[in-house]
Length: 478
Image (cartoon, rainbow, N blue to C red; front, side, top):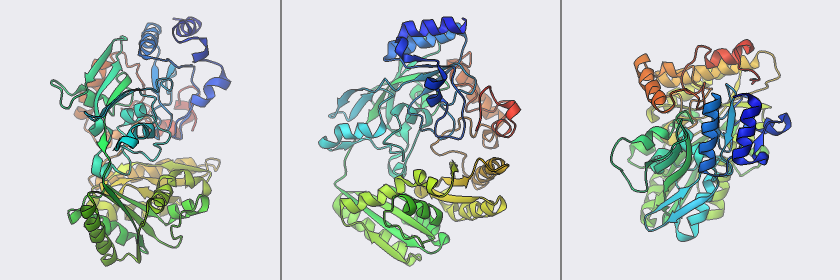
């Protein structure tokens, strides 16, 4: 189908207003939260599942790719149209379709913003547990695509632990439900296959999510350290004592500097690291746990331990943590967010390796991460305008991911693989592993049109594409 005919077909489906082709209109869809950019050819914004299915059918007839897009907050290039085609924005599918508090579920469309699910049920004493740092902006559909986590992953798990079912549009435009509104539906767990598939198998158009009861008591503690080694060892000792906090976060001196330079919350600028620890449950339990954690931190070398005395103080501490990524702009023009995982027992070792990599590549690295589940977020600070600096950033990122694997970890904890890490996935999985996963993908997307050039290695690998502009898809730049 010629491009003009495809555009006419799409406008007949979703309306002329919701098909964008002019450069000044599509430019805002060229990038997600990563360092990759590709100018889209066509952006379509359907308003319901039937329009999504019709767009998918039109794309199939035209033999063009489809790139599903949520809020564009992803950090691995998953929403970047690397091979052109149609960017399918799901922003208009933003309804909370159903709330069923007796059964503790909600049915939401993919464009619903994460925090809005909790806002919709908070007055009834419920909440939606997955809480990425971008939860005020990220969409549930994007969370499903990347199996997103957040600070409270340690206690509650990632997105897949809170999704019961998904309505999806398949390659031929068929609309089906995988899973449902109850736990453990019979048959293959195809819902589990879709969660974390990064848009490579179809388009999710509704999600059945679990709701949880708000806890009676929440206690939050900030421990301040003069040595990174003491802070990381405290994480090992807290969890080793049998305490499972709701959240166990860490920030280093550089991150503290960024936060306090932008929107200060009272973190001590001279500290080498701080731990932010939160426990939830019945009051007697949280009081006991916070006292035990207080003692572990002090015995382990914390120079000061502060327990939030009220909700205002607690929210101020979390404002600093959740605003940490955005605060990096106070220190450098650009930053590259890494996303590796190690076993908790290896936190002291990986932080030492990150410091060595920082020196090796002469790059400043700010660390802010989910220490409780070993999910690192080294932020490599740089200036993209400096010749050769981006190459060093990419090499440093690869070195960190390689170190994570060597220490028994993984290349991603919650951001997904996308374009960013597909060159490194072969370090984690064997050829047989990757072939098995590819067969599953092909069973649902035989033509390879859903979000191509993502997740799996391609002949022009991620690292090669970044370093050699001649290998970039048309329009791609970073």
